[in-house]
Image (tube, rainbow, N blue to C red; front, side, top):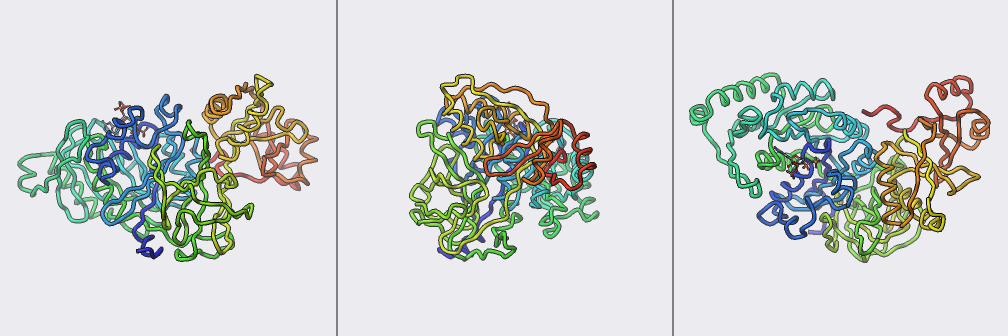
Length: 528
Ligand code: G4P
């Protein structure tokens, strides 16, 4: 079956977003367990490689900090579907990266810790989701230990995210006393059983109501009452409002014990939309069965220490991708070979022989590709540009060992291309003392670490007085450069940014000089 439309209809491509520690990594691993991609036991990948906490975590810094900074794509089959799971960084400082990953996803799963509910970073990541108008499912995790009540969590979703929560499953047993769930579609009560360390699939039994009442007592009667009440209130899954991001199907579970993981995965198959024709920059849509094309949403170097290679992650948007085909990079119009295309499985790579809309492939050493680029074979296309986020933190970078200046330049260029950090240069100083601009301060740590370890260029960062940036143009920049408390710097692709010491000062300049271009960028102070 090589028909791209049929193949696309089997694909479910989504990302998981969560506050660090809510359980994204654990859930990812359990998805692989239920998808049969880990053999019969979760943790086998860890055991085999002996050094990874989970399949999708692979960088040193992630290991040390226990957070996921980089993104990976995992593919496995479940039911009749091909599931493409895109990993996103958990920390808000990397929300720009999350935004780019969401450009390649058709939906998201938001994971919440039942004891914590909506946390600051969940909110920011959720705003990113809303910005991209992407539908999302909600998984309330860690029901195996004490937490907030289920109704309280629904209220929180409704009040803080302004989204209607529509439970698909409803928990039997308070948090910490998790017995099973009632499925709101068919009213069936499924009881789960624990397994040793949650490393194998949790056995499930369908229990009739009389037995449930006898065995679970009040836990059962309360759950049944709440589940029926929610239905009476019309809190049931509505596909249309879900697709518009106005409601979110909610699942309860525990990734640790595997309770509820299968229902969530079923939810992915039943609710996540399969890939649909993408909108092009021209406003036209790209039919799924057009000749092969793809969108580059992530560029990452240094994934494999032994090879120091650079991988461009591409989502297939139309047609059938076949390894070895010659593709064209839209921006440079240069042809390149796809001999080294790979599907990703954490650090393990498999050669990708073919792929269809919704799939993600890594193109190794396709050096011409940048984030946002279109790749095609026949019909030239381009996608709407991915907007750069407004940086809010600005540090000046200097190489501490001047003999390493070449390495420093190379490293900066790489980090800039990946979008790991924005590199801003003064037109007169160039790379002498560029300013690194970030959405969140942790990006500086990553940049410093990578410049030192990957490129051998130790750097020193010093504070600057800038706090806010706006996009400007050549006409406005001469006037802005003469003003105090303002500087105009350039990004490598030519965008000019005006940096201000304070918002107050910026507002004043805008008020006094309405003729100057000072355009807001996405997420300027607005998210989170
Ligand atoms: P993240 O990727 O979102 O950052 O979270 P991760 O899966 O790494 O989980 C964070 C911690 O929460 C881990 O504990 C993990 O075991 C635990 N956890 C995940 N899901 C559940 C759950 O359903 N119930 C309970 N009780 N705990 C859960 P840790 O102590 O930091 O690490 P570990 O030593 O257990 O691996």
